[in-house]
Amino acid sequence: MQTLEEYQKTIMFPVGNKNDAYAKYFTGQSYIAPISTEQVKMFNVTFEPKCRNNWHIHNAKQGGGQILIAVGGRGYYQEWGKEPIEMKAGDVVNIPANVKHWHGAAPNSWFSHIAVEVDGTETSNEWLEPVSDEEYGKLK
Image 1 (spheres, rainbow, N blue to C red):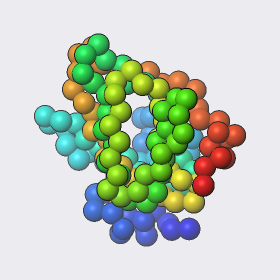
Image 2: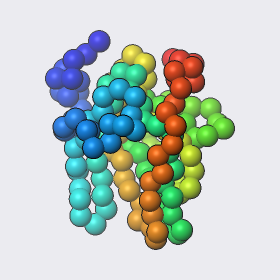
Image 3: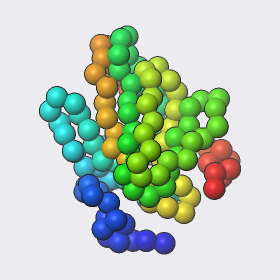
Image 4: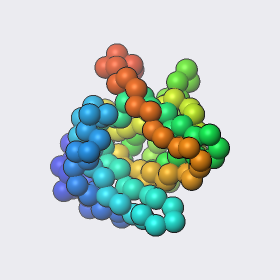
């Protein structure tokens, strides 16, 4: 398994610092690096192998949601009630507002994606329950 330093050499964006501010919403260690904080907010989020965030919803009255652009490693995105989608560098997932979902690394791979916050009105993030080990254990 690659070390963080080895993995960093395989992607074009910085891994950043430990994502301590949101650690309570993640299973495992994640890292975050701001890519753009003006006009459109974009962050490179890196997940160690097996790391994933909790189920959550990007609420918005109008607009809103999130776009994920995979930039390294291998990971997954899953909407509530649907099958997980495998993500590799170059894959893009458009997440509409008000959709319950999670995303994170595959069990045996680091994973990084650019998280793009879609502008909207009355937006908020609603963090929910962790992805269970049983659910996550079904992934390859």
